[in-house]
Length: 353
Image (tube, rainbow, N blue to C red; front, top):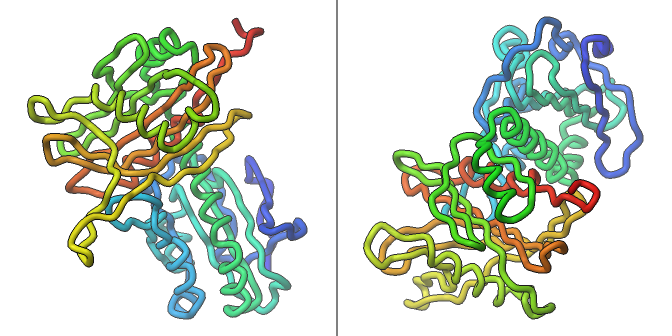
């Protein structure tokens, strides 16, 4: 066993999931870090290259890895996995694909004392994340992954989010960012490609249109009248008031929020309430609603996720509402970058003004 060649690492982070102590990871020749100039990372967003030989891949360990990555993305119209998996052997990886953007290396060896994960960034390409998952046996690694699969997904999701934000900073829709700052007194990182569709005093509709899909969001400010303004019912009501300003494909049609879903068994409908959570970003608490939208007066629809917070400077509630329309293709890769937008919002303090 040879130690990882730390001298080639630009950054080295050792993540031990669930409060395990920091450890020194070793590996055999096929898992040795590679030298050379940084290349542009390969691979599609939300695609992970799993470096795993046949014995482990066909074992319960391979089954558990596939199951973890197949975890469904929450609140989509159809089932989509958190990550798509491309599997390759260690020998082929060394010669062909060391510059993939998301890499999981699987090392099962009796000489390894305990299960753990090592995370490295930009080893041979950028932006790149390389996770080495090691353990002494298939059984031990399966148990470890059952307990820590969510942490693995989160580390990879953060890497994807950071890529979106970095791209937005380098290739920004500057005119849109300036309009957002002027209207709502906030700073927001918005990647290039988004265009203004509609605006009013308290509303902006912005989208990125594709031949067979639409990736959009709208920002709006609305009154805060105490805790009753923060109930799910009140937030959906406010959403519908502003969503009416987004027209559908036919005259008089407009966006609205789905409140019931078809139920074949009962030959009718089942009431649907958007899922609700709280997210803290840069010290700011956001109420997150996940649900579905459709068009009143026409046949269109898709998933949405909205983020609402109290803007202390204005005394109003500010909402970022993100939606996707993609009837022919998957929705995950359209919706995820929209979800990342909230991480690029900054409320200037008095000292910044």
